[in-house]
Amino acid sequence: MSVPHDHAERPARVLAILATIGIAIVIVVLVRSPSANDRPEWVKIAPPLEVPMHPWQWIVIHHSGTPGGDTGSIDNAHLKDRGWEGIGYHFVIGNGRPMERGRIEATWRWRCQYHGAHAGSMPAQAAYNQDGIGICVIGDYQTSQLDAFVEERVARLCALLIQHVPTLSEQHIVGHRDIRQTACPGANVDINRIRYLVRSQLALTAAK
Ligand SMILES: [Zn+2]
Image (cartoon, rainbow, N blue to C red; front, side, top):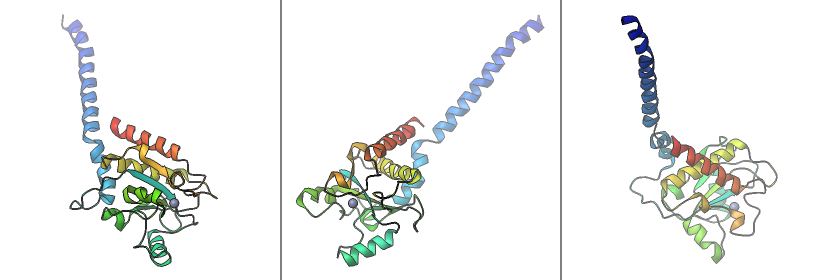
């Protein structure tokens, strides 16, 4: 009697092992929650806790229109050549010349939750300066292709902002050319594709 009994128990034991593995996988997935995953990258760019988040309405994508550069070179140009308070953008993303490719840097405007100076000086653009987060991707995307990795990083920054700024969604992402007559951010930057990449990243985070 004992032999058939053992045989009957074996599938049950296998099921128990499989169930244990299943529970372990669920625990691992839960522990690696989206907030835990996103925290390190968000922490690098989050404004200080004592600075209240501005109710941003737009994310405006720009290119530098130059082969290379970094946050400092744009800050200098905007301060000295244009007489502004300093860099007009809230974020800069590098293209490897010389700022690290795909590196995201927040400027003082973002840290202080201060309005931008990137949309244009006409009354029609005032709201985009006041309530628009300006992201400058280093490079000239009218004459050169946008590297897929840098494009992913642009989408990553937009996704992070949408996750942490309650007033934003991917529908609020626009190109500079959508709000004034300019080629910026260049013919090779496809805003619809960036929106699609953002949606994919947000869906992936939600599914984790
Ligand atoms: Zn622009």
